[in-house]
Amino acid sequence: MEKPSWPMEIVFTENDEATRADIIIEVGGRRYQGWGRAHRNPNDPDIPRIGEEVAAARALTRLALGVARRGR
Image (cartoon, rainbow, N blue to C red; front, top):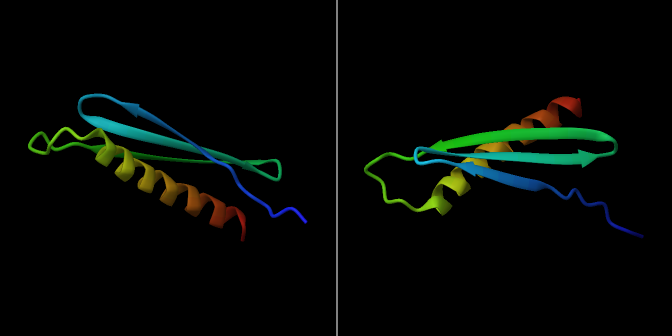
């Protein structure tokens, strides 16, 4: 028996000041989306991975809330 899985894609958009993460999953004919943004303080080191992680975490939070709302 095949175990269900929910593949997702995270796409990052970055500029000098912010990173945005957009997540899309499709499950059972329904499409769920979440997005998150991280802003870099000018005094922080320029390490894009940190902004990606923060933006992705925020996007996952929004995605989870959307899935939970529809599951009620």
